[in-house]
Image (cartoon, rainbow, N blue to C red; front, top):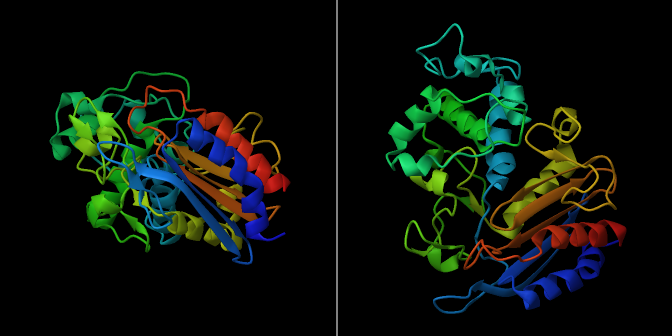
Length: 328
């Protein structure tokens, strides 16, 4: 079955979602042999004035940053022998909780635990409310006594990994080399708008939606990456054609290294195989890779424009698209 056939099978739920309230969406499908199909519908921006969406539109990828930038960057450092997955974070960040080197729980966390969200760190923290100086906020993240809790999906895990990448490479994240079609600061005129932010007092377009990533300078381990649909599909195709077993191996019932693993009720739908990984972003983005079916797909939307406080049906839409693409 061609990529175009799979795409066509999934267009109805996307069109319905755009008609019902999501400003715009781009759906792309790629097969293991490189066959690709893409369709764009709706608006890149609804207000203050309408701007049409097209295939080359940049999207704020939000938490797709975790799997399209941070995870591969850490795994490259592992492959180069700079770190090992089961090394603790102080190998790269010796000043982590530096005032309690003997007892701090954060100093015992490993790269593997952070990548697979198997730590005590909280899901999210409004760090931006403590100020907007990036270096001071980085220091705050490193020295904060994080309260213990059960393992949850955590932005803090990936903020720490982002800091580790900066320390190991000697360069800020926003100076790291990115593949074509990815950027930290795209042209706003070519970018899908996100929220009308009450904190920043404007519609966000070409600047990261995530408040913490913004306060950290625009690039962080958990968010800040922008990309086009073709760039996301390029990354997915690279996984289809050469993902290491390590990336696909479950670290828990629902997590691989960086990626979410297929499980009941997840974002990728029920039709995909057990050997499927995926990830979503808060702004309305997502990418999934089914190794058994030999197909990957990405749905990029600006569902938080102009407000996150509106029910857009994004959860059901993602599942319907996954079922249609694989089930076709």
